[in-house]
Image 1 (cartoon, rainbow, N blue to C red):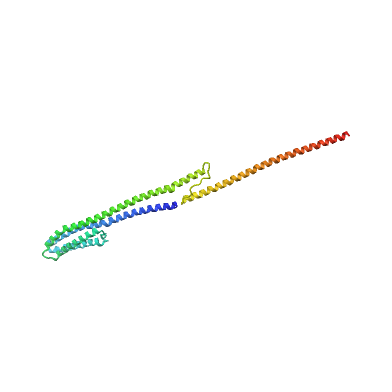
Image 2: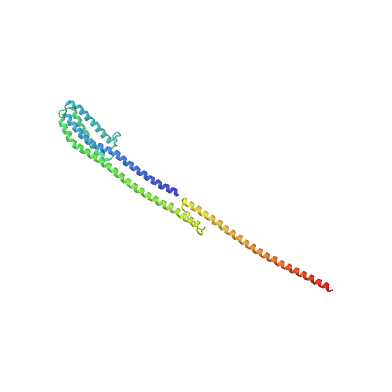
Length: 302
């Protein structure tokens, strides 16, 4: 694998972990956004239950002229109560409610809804104007604590569910962070061992060739399957070619030197031969002169 591919792989892994962390953070933020309204609105059900009990008590005690206003307020509270309950079951964008999904919370929601339907029917029956209204108000007052207790259970379950999600999210975030640090450490080791250290070794080898004796027999390890391996391979080829050129130059220099030496010897021998010839010619000339003198002397004596 090339150095570029290794670095890109490491960078890609780091990007994946960073995106994962961001995703977990957004997920946690989404949980808080989705669960907070559910917890707040489920908590408001308790207050609304007590308010309906109070309005019911006021309804039977106020003059007939004021009953219509209280009746309207009761109806408005019931409508809002139903809207919240339906939001828990199916979700409601206007209330920013997400439908309850956990099994235990759904079971408790069903129990609360059953209580609510009974509680609502009892409150609505007050508007019929029968003589047993006080009895119904007493029933409402008696039923409220039990009903609110069931609502409290739902609130606690929703809160616990939210806390469990946040805890799980934090655990996942911690795990991803640890893995991310591990990948970063691995990336650091890979860069040191696969890039920096080989480059230093390559620089040292270049320095050994460039300085000192200039040993051209040095060959570097070119078995790496990356860019440094290619550089090393071509460096070895270059050094091999330089060594061949120097070897040929040395051989040529030796041959030229040998020929020059032979030429010098031949020139020396030629000079000696010329000297011998000159001496021989001189001796012949001297012999001829001597013979000429002898002939002159012989002619004179006769």
